[in-house]
Image (tube, rainbow, N blue to C red; front, side, top):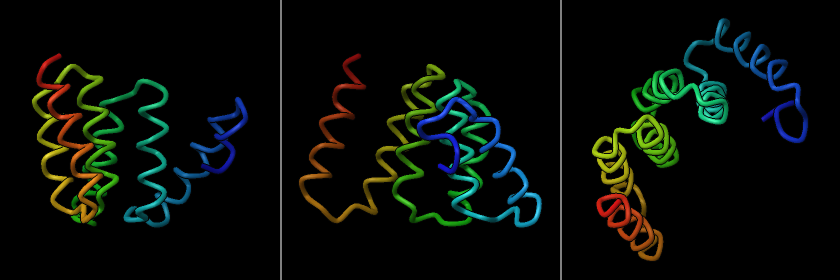
Length: 111
């Protein structure tokens, strides 16, 4: 993600991405990156807001479901995290990946 990887100047990247979404609020990649940066910085509510917007714009974007799952889990909402994983795996075609998702769901349920 622009300047965020390998540097401590994450805010420069955030500002660039915010400029992009001001011009194009439906820019999927900018919203995904803002969501991921929000997760990284512990701003899970902001991450969920951004990523839910992406999910509305592109309901088959598998990665977004998994990012949303992570944000919900870190906010303490294990049931919502599992729900996002269940929804996201519907768009996965790789049996090994589905098995990994199912194993992760089992771990979440047991935790």
